[in-house]
Image 1 (cartoon, rainbow, N blue to C red):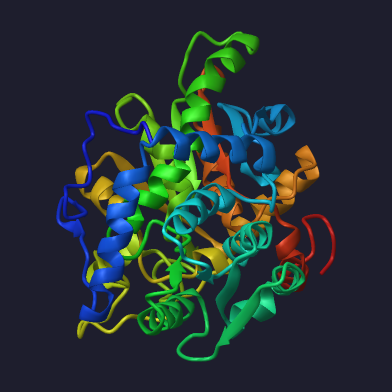
Image 2: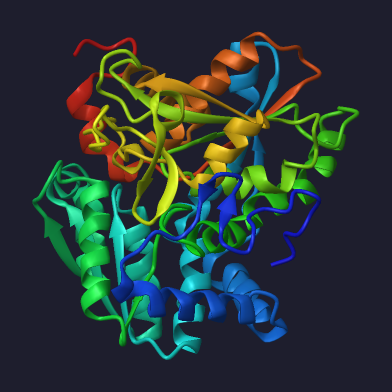
Length: 411
């Protein structure tokens, strides 16, 4: 995938420092080893890469543009705000980048049945889309709570021919959907490919998903020098890159190509929910402790007995009690910073971008926007912040309208 650099992570066992690895039941060992061997075989294969890049161009519509939010930057003052427009991809988010890569891998492995988990539904829609295009059987596991708050995406998945399996156990959100998908995989390893949507799960998923998503950051490296020239700015890279973090695939996709550029700050924004001290949040990096979840060791929200805690976020895609192991490692190294944005701050950012720039963002991406707005105000005009606008917000309209009226209107 041409992502090799002086930052040589993970190791051969899938560890990013002390995080990552592959902690799975014996029944899955053969399937995971088969997947790892296939990925190693194809990740630098010219024919595989040619098909992957062609699909990204012709089907997804890449490269996605980087947009200078001029009015917003002038209103806030301080640094220029640049938006990487992953919301303009086919299916409306960054998820399809990884889905195309894994689906191509599944076909080369002879797997005709695809299963996946989804929270906000964007990954589920992307999987259903590619399965429809390739004629593959598709089953999407989704928490019943998420199905209610993301009903437009449930309808899209049904329309595309997918079976959406409601999960009613636990908190009925993303964690529980992933649990059920893994159970399905255990029972159907010979015919089924598990298409994970984030940089979570057992090795090689965190690395594989990252590699497919680095197209985001690699495009930015090429796009920004020309954009800065048009803006009359004497620079090649942004001063900071900001992205929301749940499991963390959109963030690692834009962070990874910048890791070796030490002058660029990398800032992940977690869901602070009702507040980091409220107990109702999804801030795994800031409030989590090392533990094992879904096959890898990372920072997990858990009690003193090691029981995974319930999480909360207004955004279904960030409502997860763990974080990808590479994010945990970047945090431990001090290479990336992790902060929080509350539900209220995300809602305010959602309305502000919509009203000022005519772009309706996903609630997930609104968390990144909220922090970027605060950060920009304390910086100078000759500085720039690159925000990964990871998805569009049409899926979130019911949630947003039920929460509050836009600023300036009575509720």
